[in-house]
Image (cartoon, rainbow, N blue to C red; front, side):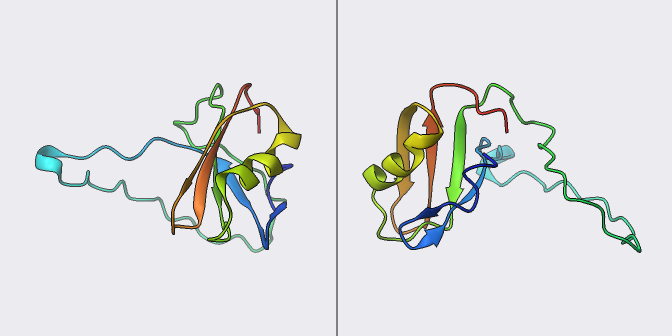
Length: 110
């Protein structure tokens, strides 16, 4: 995922992250209550950025979220652009949304 992040597909750099399942809904289809995020004081210094996976991250997940896509990019173009990073199982772009998903045949690690 790190290697793919920022690589251009058409006219824009791709934004890559692990694909995660949609949030579950509460009773009667209402959205589940959001979990409050802890607030931490801002340190006086900045340390190197370390990529941390969310607690529900599955290390066997082979699907990535691809954001910041040009609205004219086709699934075939995204597939061809992603082949250099591994065997592709499937590619799906959400029409008119500027994002999609790429499923690889083997785990990407990170």
